[in-house]
Length: 400
View 1 (tube, rainbow, N blue to C red):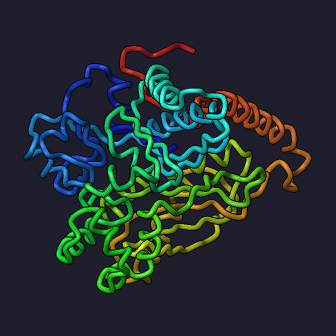
View 2: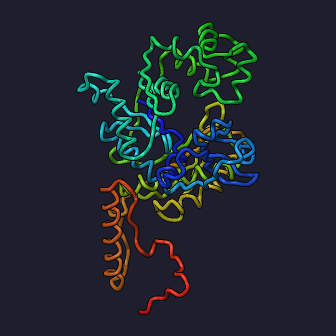
View 3: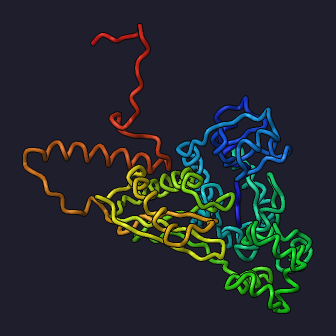
């Protein structure tokens, strides 16, 4: 199963403020350099979409409400989403903050009507969290991804291999997941207008198509023929690293464009590290270029940590160095990996006799907070000292 949350950022804002329901919403930063991260379905009717410059979106839909990105809040909602999925199966692989794969093979053995089961899963998610989703069910991950894209929002599609010619072949080539917006026009120039045209030329081993796609040709051919991976990847019991990635809504090359997504990724891996009671001594930043090649650059942290702010401090210089080395190409995916993980409880801590009691007290508080957050599966609690201090309004001073 591939499950994709519909207009996730916009949906989160409506959950937080129901008065926004039914309004055209643009999630992102305003100004000429701002980019639309998510457009609500109401805004999409005017031609607005993710990856679009904000000023262009507002020209198309002047009445749209612009809301800044709040990755902390979206990360919390994402944790609720994946926690919900794990009630049905432990085999869950997050693909990004708002989508993932789940192996439902064992779960479906007890269901006499699989279609009704998935519709029930979908409606219960909406009821419990307020989040709507589209579901694709298929024998491979690529087919499941394609199936979930067929009906949005709140759609559900079961795609069998024998259904590929009927359901996928008529689709425009731009809808082929994995083929970017820069490649699609070149394929159209070669006479490939639909996925069916692609399948026909791939089957014939068209030399021009091979040259255009390079190493990706064999993978794409396998996918459209019904092959490819069906393995859902989950974290090991004792992970040696914790990483996450985000497929960008549009091809990027500037750090300012990807910075908000890096922030969300850092929050996600921080939450996972804290849940696993792990801290990392190293960090790796990776990017995937338009030819699907993965490139990475790594460094060490100043000290072992799972703090998202400390992780982000290293991200920008690593990203800039990596992009410079590659010649500043356009990229389609970014990721961060926390490496060289340790369990701080098992590390030897050097301290003096004089500060032992203070350290022990602070450590016990930290462990208690982390334990409670794990039980709720949400980062709901923190030390008072970590909370932002807000100035008290004038005329409302408290006497001590």
